[in-house]
Every structure is written in C-alpha cells, then in structure tokens.
Amino acid sequence: MIEKILKYFPHLTARQQEQFSAMMALYPEWNEKINVISRKDIDNLEVSHLLHSMAIAKFIKFTPESRVLDFGTGGGLPGLPLAVLFPDVRFHLIDRVGKKLKVAADIAERTGLENVTIQHGDSGECHERFDFVVSRAVMPQPDLVRLCRRNISAVQRNPVPNGLIALKGGDLTHELKDLKHSEVVDLSNYFNEEFFSTKKIVYTPIGN
Image 1 (tube, one colour):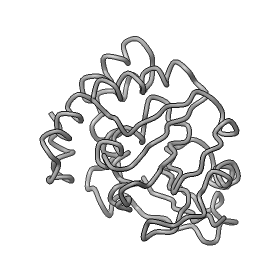
Image 2 (tube, one colour):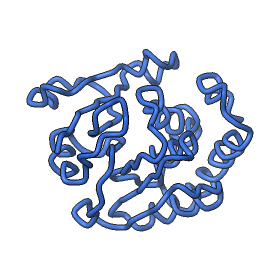
Image 3 (cartoon, rainbow, N blue to C red):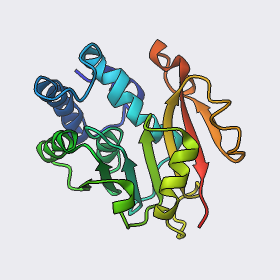
Image 4 (cartoon, rainbow, N blue to C red):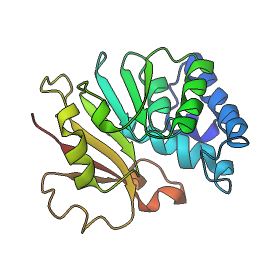
C-alpha cells in the first residue's frame, strides 16, 4: 500500500509504516467530505502528496528537538508526513482555513502523532520561533520570507542554517531573482517518478 514510499525510505520502522498506511486510508476518507486534495488527484496521494512532502527529509535530517512550522498546512502537508519521519522533532501546523485543519488534526490523532500541534489563524498570530519554516506551494518565496522571518529562531541546532524550505514547481527564475542566497534542488535528484521532473525544493536561509 505504501510501495513507493518504501522504495525511497526503506528503513522505516513498523510503526512509521503503519502511520503512512493509515494516512493512505484517512485522506481519501476525509476527501469525500472536504475537498482537501483535488478530487482528480486523490488517486495519486502516495506520490504527489505524501512522497512529495517527504522530499524535505531528503534535503535535511532535522536534529532531534528541532522545531518546525508548517506554514499554510491545509490538510497537514507537508507537516504530517514529516512528523512521522521525525518523531523527535516538534511540528506546529498553521492555516487560516479551519475545515482543512480539522482534517489535519483528525489524521494526526488517528495516526498517533504526539509531536504535532495545530493552530487556526494567520501567520501573524503565531508568536513562537522555529528552526525552520516549511511550506508547500503557498505563495511566492519572497512573500514567505517576509512573513515568516520573525518566526525563525536565532539559535542554531542543525547542520543547515535556520530558514525557509518550500516545495515548488516550474520556472522560478523571476520569483527568486532578488533572493540571491536561495538554493534550488531538483526533486528528480531524489525520485525518478515523472511527477517530480519539474518539482523543486527552494531553501532560503534566514538569519536573525
């Protein structure tokens, strides 16, 4: 049921495998009630949503006790799959759409994720600080940097400097022209499915 996930993450524990299998059942169940994932795309849940979210774990292995903010999480992506991969890391999920957060909260509970907290609101209502902010196709990178800068901690505990890690697609030349220190990584470096041919991670260090 999670064949593609195991192809790229073969060392998952039995517990982690159970949690991803549960997500594979729970997201379609919720999607019948709330359109969290495009209805035409729900059949591609494993690759286009779960594995896509997990790409961040190919870019960085978060140090235990790190804190990560999932900005505009929607139904819990990429935060919930990452929380499965990094049980010793705290994930805080925030979104303005309450009905989507209801999905994220239910899936977190039913998969037994104890390292996840959820906040309904705008980024301006989150006053905590984090090692990293992660995001999945929410808004242009310069806007994300501006909004999340004050949420980035000055304390460094990871080998990669604190900052923003966003999952994006397409031509990012114009979007990143003023973010000279950003790093762009093609997800085709990690995965060989056609879906990933135009997908990228964009990492922008943010110093405070």
